[in-house]
Image 1 (cartoon, rainbow, N blue to C red):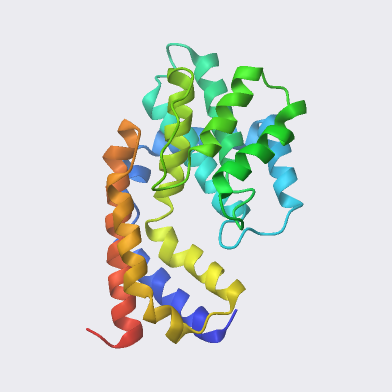
Image 2: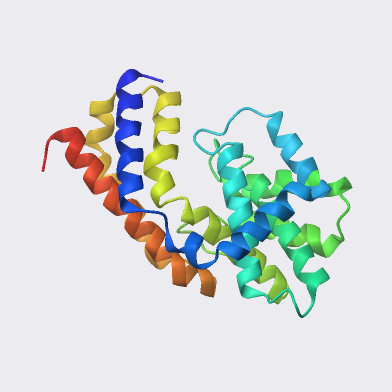
Length: 246
C-alpha cells in the first residue's frame, strides 16, 4: 500500500471512531452475537469459507467483507424471525444467509457480477447438503444483491427475507466500512494516485448517498440509513482533511 494511502486510511479510521459505531450493533447486539457464533460453528458455512480462502481477494470485497455481510445478514434474519417459535427453521435460514453472504461477491471483479456470481454459486452448491429450494433461495439472493438493479421476487417469505437480508447487510458496508476499509483496498490494488481519487471523491459520495433509500427488509430500513449517514459524515470530514477544504 502506498504511504499516502496508509496515512489517509489512518485518518479515516480515526474519524470513524469519532463518528461512532452504527446503531444496529448496539440495538441488536444479541442477534449480531448469536449470528457470529452460528457462523463459526456451522460446517456448511465452513465449507464455503474454505472455498473462498483459496481464491484471490475480490478488489476490496474479500473474505473479510464477505464475513461481515454474512454475519449481519444472519443477524437481520434473527431480528425479523423470532427463533423461539420455530428455532430449527430460523437457524436453518440463518445458515442459508451465512452461505449466501460468504459467496455473494465470488465474481465481484466482473461486469454483471451478481448474475455471474449466482450462476457460479449454483454450480458450487450442487453437492452441498441443501434441499433444492434452499439452493435456489441462495442463488436468487445472490442474483438480487446488486444496487440500483431490479430484484426478482423469491418463491416464499423465507426466501424473500433471505434475499432482502443479504442485500441490506451488503449495503451496510457502504457506511463506515466504505471509507475506513474498502476504499483503500480498492485503490491500493489499482494503484490510483491519491490526487486522482480526491478528484472523483465527491461524485462517488453521491452514489453512496443514493443507497440510503434502497434498503429492503424492515430491519434494513430501520438501521440502514444510520450506516449511510455515518459513512457520509466520515467521507465529508475525510475529504476536508485531505484537501484542506475546511
